Image: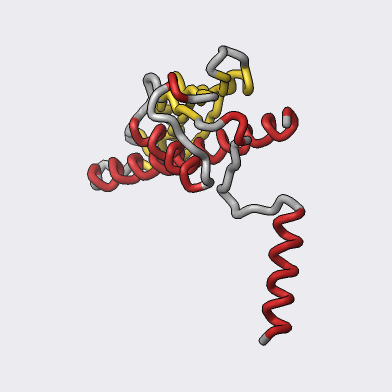
Length: 166
């Protein structure tokens, strides 16, 4: 048993030394914490998903921008529905959902830490006129999935830019 503990400790030490972290984890540099998430005109779900992801990764969040060292701004969230295919009877069979959101990160002094970037995600959904409730549920689930994926993309992009700056 002692050999197992020594081996486990060695593996953990090696992983921590190489910068390995759990998928979905994001560490904001301490010099930029606490972070304020400015949701502006985006949905509560998107803002809440980002706040939860940052909190889970150990980032200290500010309740208002006056106490923050940095601000993540989320803006211009939009979902469009485009027709992909039409049946022989002229009814829509498939839609494409296009989800867009703009984000940036800045210091409270106005200094840009991460430039404005657009996240665009697409999902195809089928339309069944005999199952309207199922279609609405599918579309709702696709949107929730795109919000979660947008948060992960935002975190990856922030990580890449802030890691170079550190």
